[in-house]
Amino acid sequence: AEKRKLRYAVELENYNRELHEKIDAIPNEKRVEPDIQIVAPALEASKYCVEKEELRKMFVNLIASSINSDKVVDVHPIFTDIIGKLSSTDAKLFRSIAKGNYDEDCVIFGASIKSISFSLTILEQLGLILSKNKNGNGADELKKNIITNDIRLFKCVIENFTIMNFAFDILYENIYDMITKYLFKENLSGTTFPRHKSVISFFVDTIELTKLGRQFKDICL
Image 1: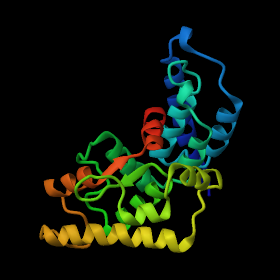
Image 2 (image 1 turned 180 degrees about the vertical axis):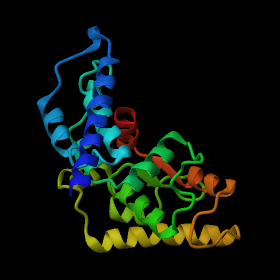
Image 3 (image 1 turned 45 degrees about the horizontal axis):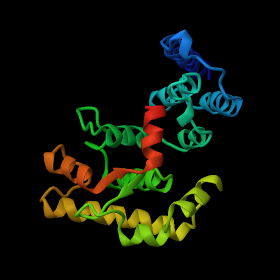
Image 4 (image 1 turned 45 degrees about the vertical axis):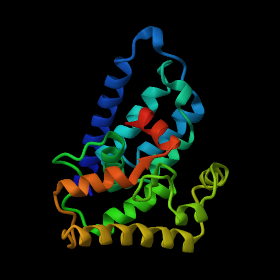
C-alpha cells in the first residue's frame, strides 16, 4: 500500500509538472478564462488516470486547450468522458491511427488480434473512428445498420455511450473477422499482429477518423 501511494505521488507530480509546462507554453495574450464545465470534470476524472501516461497526457492537452484562445472553440465537455472510457491500449491505438504513425512503439505490433479488435470496436463505438470497406467507400453495411446517421451517434454519446449489447457484440465480431480474414489472406495469421508493411497498409486503407475523432485528435493529442 505504501509503495502504491509513493508511485501515485510520483505520477501526480509528473502530471502537475506536465500541466504547468503545457500552460506556460501558451502566450499570455492567448490565454483565456477556462470553462468550468470543461476544467472541473477533467481535473476530477484525471486523478484516476495519472498513472497511465497516455491518458494523463490527453487530460493535460484537454485542459491546456481550454485555456488557449486558438483551440477553445473546438473543446467540448464530452472529451472528458471519452478519455475516461479509454484504456491505455485504446489510447495508444487511437494515437497511431490519428497520426498515421505505426512506429516501433505502436501497440498493434506484438498485441493479440483479439485485444486490438476490441480496442477498435471501442473507438468506433465512441464515434472516433469509422471502418471503411475495402474500396474505401465509407462505412460498411453493419455500421449503417447500427448507427444510421450522425443524430443517432450523438444520441448514443449523450446517453453515456450506451448502445444495445447485441449491436456492440456484432460490431466486435465483424472487426475481428475482418482482421483475421485479412491476415490469413496475407499468410500472416497468428495470435499476434506481425510487424509487416501489409498490416500497416490494412489499417490505413480500412480505418478513418470521424469528424468527432479529428476534433478529439486536435484537442487531446
